Length: 117
Length: 116
Image 1 (cartoon, rainbow over the protein chains, first blue to last red):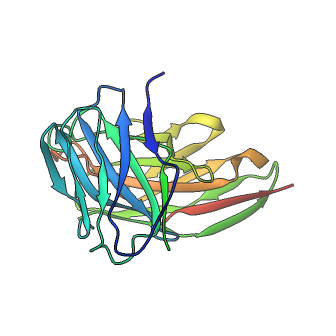
Image 2: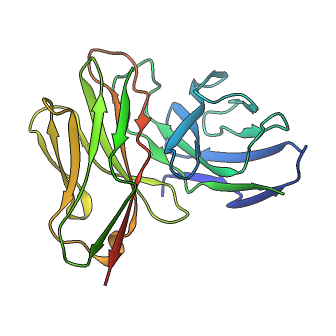
């Protein structure tokens, strides 16, 4: 079955450590996204990528980094510069990127819950 | 710029009762509108979407929503809820065909609590 996988489901990190969240999709989608979810704040866009080897900052990119070396993979690194990293992180994908279509249904992975100890 | 406001953070309702989750948006251009559902510790699943045409949109699991352009609203309704509908619901908006971007802006979410 096609879909999006995120791993791990739960992740614990000590302060000052970088950590990488995995996101893989086998939907053959061009675009991929990372969102952060905090209680009562909805979803906020961290980074997005419309095509391999290209990505753009979203609304809250500070303290995060990404790479897009393969179409199916879009890992997110939460760096020590991120002041409040404890959150639920969601990865999504869509057929086309933001600049190519005015409508994109985004498909979501199951999420990774990151807790900083 | 677009914005989305979900007017209720929590909506408690008894099983088999009707429910309405309210969503208002602001935009100076035409928009596309979406409702997503999130079950505990899971990702988001699309319930329904409005792109154009009929203002009454039917989705999965018996939900429907009505687009009201004059009131800039897109309220979600279900005539009879089940315990399994307990979840968080997100309204989202993207710019419509006048734009070349499909970025989604999400509301803050509404938690639907269905009681037996």
